[in-house]
Image (cartoon, rainbow, N blue to C red; front, top):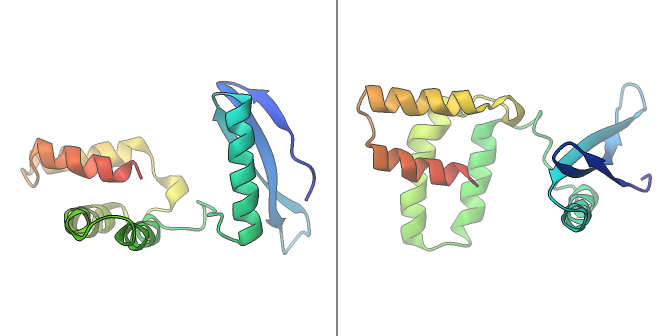
Length: 141
């Protein structure tokens, strides 16, 4: 891997990392990360991303559907929060998020998708405003 450099960009600092090789062209695949508020924070994030790349745990958002990600997230959370908290998380994720947004790839998900979903729940009176606030908190994974 080429030695990554932190550079200044709009809104802070960023970096570019090699994330693999394109099997068709043989060229390097690169991904940009940032902006981060400070150079020190960008350096810490770069170390995390390098570790994820080397361990094979870096998620490429263009390959992963939201439903897959949310299921993995629930599995991860189940090991780190109480059963009561999981009993609160699961219905929102399984009943409301996955059926409506799960088919989208992570990099396709835009704020307007989420806003349209909330608006439909309010119009159809499916969920109360407070329930929507709870669901929104789960999305800030």
